[in-house]
Image 1: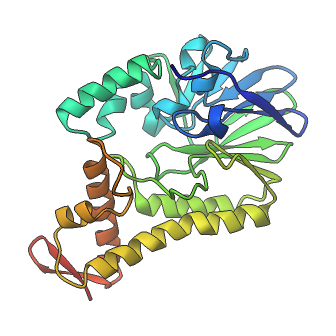
Image 2: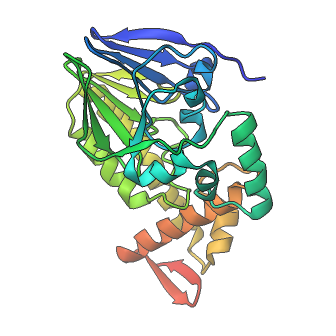
Length: 297
């Protein structure tokens, strides 16, 4: 059984990061509690909060993935997510569809979300947009739309503390993930550039890297994170010294190591391969030399 329980870390006068088990590594995640003089707000109630979730007047969700909503059932308070992820938060079936899995795997995933992550339909969930502000009294939480990981993926800027929660722009060595049906490599790159433009004191991630202090350190780590995209490009260009199909590229793998297995692997690899091939084709580095076969130029 997954363990519950979290560790509290304070930042500024009103921000508390609820560090999940195993430093927030999946299936866990880091949540954020924000206290104002009038209301308290929680961001991304994770698996580690199940049964021990702190009280809150409002819940914000950075994006509709199971590891960010596992303790949502502990709250009957209003829950909000970006309008582009709203349907997936309102319906577990829509959330599963977004993973783009084969039918038998989709059925298994639906059961896993229900039983392991406690995901339930939240038809009353409300949508917000980029720039929406939640005023808690003496402290505000402003939505920063950072699409790419999902279409509605968002960060949150908490003022006056100067804390930017960047959710799954998580700076891990795994690198950016844009393998869902609604994901976008191009949008992910734009979102990372937007993060650089926000001068915060602290940058909080949803997973192992935790909280980074200072824009310079955050920018350096973001460089390394973005570098995984460049490494995938380089791997692909080397592989395309001979004409290859998308299925051959997917089998070669750009995302997962060879030992990783599961029905999600090839669909994710295929969607990732398509995005990299199309981007490299737009810049003239890859060409379709015959129908369905691509080669580096």
